[in-house]
Length: 290
Picture 1 (cartoon, helix red, strand yellow):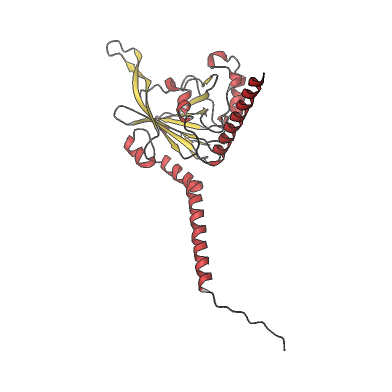
Picture 2: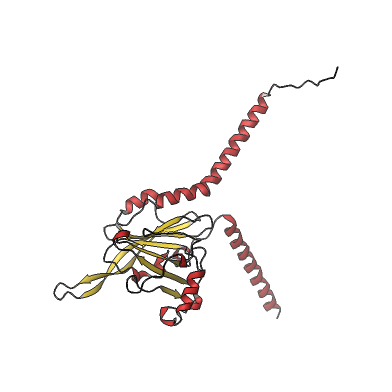
């Protein structure tokens, strides 16, 4: 008769407790990871799709909390002289607010004196934040992935020409799309903000449109550059081009001042600081010896 070893199938109480505690710890770790990555991304995208021109600022604050930045900015507005009927422009002061959506994106709103959202933009700054944004009724783009050439080129007679600016430290590119009544008389501005990711500088186009005399260069740039920002403006008398091209995204000079506190980027920045500090000390010693 073959001998069969005795197996104790009774589960020890302490073993059960250890399994339960380990399961709870693993669940909490996975939940925290989900909330800080893919889960947070879904939360941001869901709330962003609840936005629309002419909503109240308090409504936006209820969705995203308090903004990190707030300042005033003048925007041009069309006006008609009642005596002559001539078209002119006036300066209108608006309140600009920006929310950092974690390390994934920036949300920016442009509000009137009554705190009504006249324009708002979304700018991706991460590879994992690539929401789909509808442009008009017939086009969609995926931020950080779709190229400018996925949309038809703007008509100079309707939307105006593409705008860009390249400076010593900053750059941006923007083009407007308007679809009339089917689009609810809204204007969609897509482009590349230097505060977003990926951000391809239009260096071959020159410093501004006045310096570009080769339309083929614009087509080559549109075929290569990826859209990282979308600005949506409601129907009205605002001259959207008066804030472009930099207005397609957040004010880079403000958002860049916030230093990263965690993550791989923070470690890289701290490593760069240590290298610069060690290099400066080495140079001081060499200068002293000489």
